[in-house]
Image (cartoon, rainbow, N blue to C red):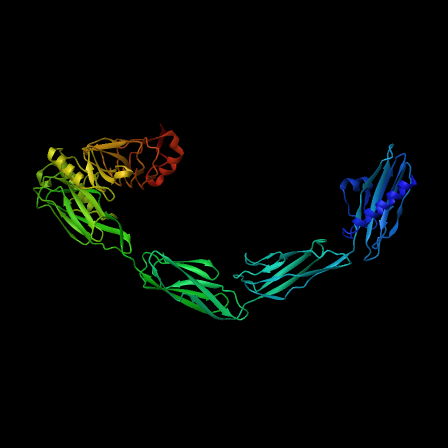
Length: 616
């Protein structure tokens, strides 16, 4: 048994020596712990004055408390066979700088003489007396430096510290892996740092480091002169020269530009891109690079090159309208495109039967004169861009009998058109400045609806000839409605409803498709103002292929009480499309589209909270 005790003692001694290298803080109020509590925790900070209680009640075995000094020598403790006994060990004080490892070993020998050692070791280490930051007193902006700090105390103190920035600073000023990085855009003149001991966070040091700016002698840009097309960009780089090799940090601005679309985009602290707007009128745009740390700057001159104009489309102030025989109609067009395309238009008319029905144009304005002996039901007006004649716009002008004929209905309709066209609205609609309207159901935003006309073979033949001659943008009719072709070919034959041919229809049915002259067209949209101010319409049915409904499409249809929408693919409804219709209207929409359509059919379209929504 004595041999076993000797072996256990040396095992404890070796274990204590191994543990003596792991430090804990020398501080704290006296406390009492049991060996079992220390063992369960795995480790415990033990300080001088603390008490350790030991309970032992094995029939054969021993327990003890041993300690080692800083040189590894045995410095006292309790050891022996303490049968059925309890005792308390008080951790002795130790002098400054004196390492002490207290190792608690419970040794039990069971009936088979198997030795079991329970390690509940803990340590006491030297005091930390302070932290001292030892880095430079200043740092240049946009640069970085290594941070240094010394942890003072007795031998064996950990030198590891945690760094913090205490003062306000730019988001790009930071500390990483013991280095301080100052942002190029740092506005503070000094930075306050704090170093905290990892071993004992009660010890720290604070230091203020000033931020200096370099002496700048010159700023250069590359290139100093460059050409750029409208609608394109180019890159510019700046270099900053001066003492101590300053960072190339500059502030970019543009001067002499006329377009808001001409903009700068910073790519880095010393490079940028300038984009020249398509509508830029200046021949030279200046890009200025100014040092952030001085008044030094340099310019890059950008010559603006205007590419050849590009015509995107031609628009007219009407899609459809009406005019009396013997009267004139003023028409305006606009050429829309890039790089200021010419506004000159080539005007022409089709489908007229009288040589006295003419159109005369000047630039983008024209006057259509309808002869008194004109027999055509409608005239097609064509406006082509003189710059790119493949870009054109068409409109249909329905011809009414002269008000001198005494036909009351035609009188009312013609007066209505003339009154609307001379009202000075934002669409610029004007035909005549004399007659007034009692009924404005055929006037629309940028287009008007057809009145009642007599269908005859000659008008059908004329319509067919026009349909054959025109392609995209041409006006066609099926006898009830008027359509504009919006696409043909591989993408499919598609049309938009733009007017009525039979004015007395009370039920409007926009079907999936329409067949005209043997060609099937898918109906995908309802044009702006198509049925505006129509006093006859009571019901509207919109089939499954409609994607868009134009501005004021049904505006002012005061008798309209039922709208049934079968389409589930509507993506846009124009402003005021359903404004000023009957207050008791019922809007029926697919059940699966309720949530989506409540956002699309909103207050701006004329659909209010009072509108009754029905699921179908």
